[in-house]
Length: 108
Image 1: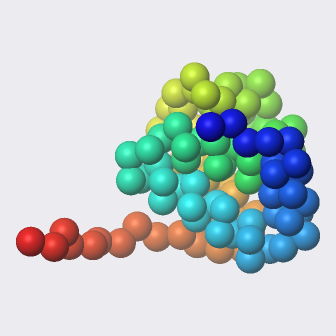
Image 2: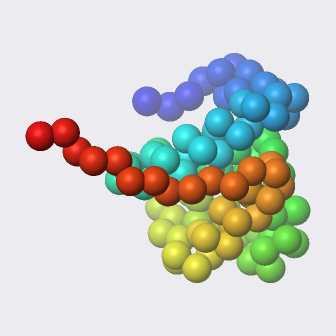
């Protein structure tokens, strides 16, 4: 289901003014990708990038062209692992956080 323009605007406005919300968006995007829902994870990260950093500034920081970044996080994008991890590293630095992958045992 597509997001309405009003909802997307509200989301972006909140992310611009609320650091905790931005950090939660970043974490949720990465968690969603790790859980196997790459498409949704990319969409969350795309919204995060648009509201927190901007693709032009991210391109300057990562030395990956902005158009390539937009394609990576678009619906048909298939980011290479090295580019994805470089972007994630920069986004963590931008937010002043460090995310870690932890082990969680499946229940029997």
